[in-house]
Image 1 (cartoon, rainbow, N blue to C red):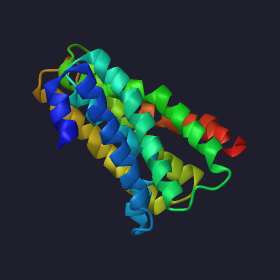
Image 2: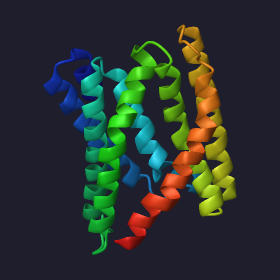
Image 3: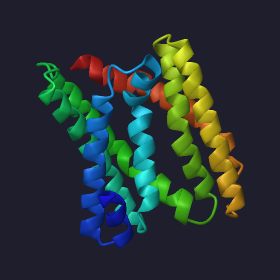
Image 4: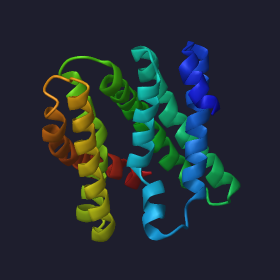
Length: 212
């Protein structure tokens, strides 16, 4: 409850501290859940899990610039929590430092965008709300494409794609009910964004991880 209380208080120090704690706990939890049934294991060991919770954190923060900075901090501390748990669990090998650095850099690049997206969906006005909703949904769709086209895990990929489609639909309904302009852009842009996310993960992120 401490992170949620910090978000409600709204002071920058409390918000960023709460975000850091939230991230550390999320990273630790996603490592601890490894070895569960395949679908649970895949859901915890996924890019979209960290990203969705970063968007949730952004939605809970009242001030836009804090949501942006909080998104970066959230992704960084989630990475730190995961690899700290990996170190204590004895699974952090000699090659892990390079991989951790790539994920940390990716989090610092994408975290502000997702923090902004969460804040925008809940608190902003205008067409950007629908675009932000598409950004949140596209990461699940993109990872579904990666699991299917890249890794050939078609059963798990189907679950991610269905979850991403449902998330896009729910966000579209939420935006419509709250009076967002052109709310339908969320559903229209999410699939295209998912393809872009898949291509970025395939060509950039996977290449960086393979080189370390």
